[in-house]
Length: 160
Image 1 (spheres, rainbow, N blue to C red):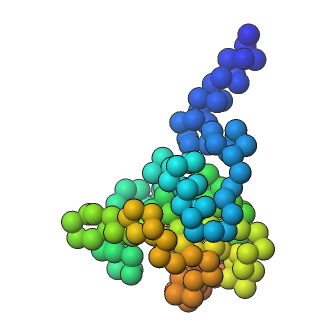
Image 2 (image 1 turned 30 degrees about the horizontal axis):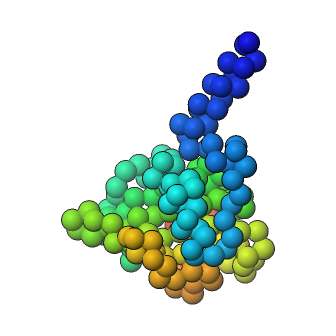
């Protein structure tokens, strides 16, 4: 009986942390804009993921993604202590205007072998409804993020 209580407790904890799809065996999406959107919006909604400790909630931004941003990360990205991040890591940034309305959602998705020259990141940009604006080896994303290649192309959080 104690064994079942431990298993049930772990399942509840996983559900609370947004890990249940991973534990249930839901596969990661293909390196495809539509598949990634389906994954982060329906399969395992990114708004239920965690946030880096130094980037909790909405924060002001001077980047091209909006005057305010909110960043979410799945468990592999969130728990990474050093770079490079593990394949399957996903970082989602909501870009907001001055009224705090989400006007774009940009995603970094680590896919083993996708683009070794740029850290194996698959990049995607969506409007607030999930319409794909750009996806794949997006030159604008790579050229901006390559200045932090030593931090695995992640600008918003430093891994130590």
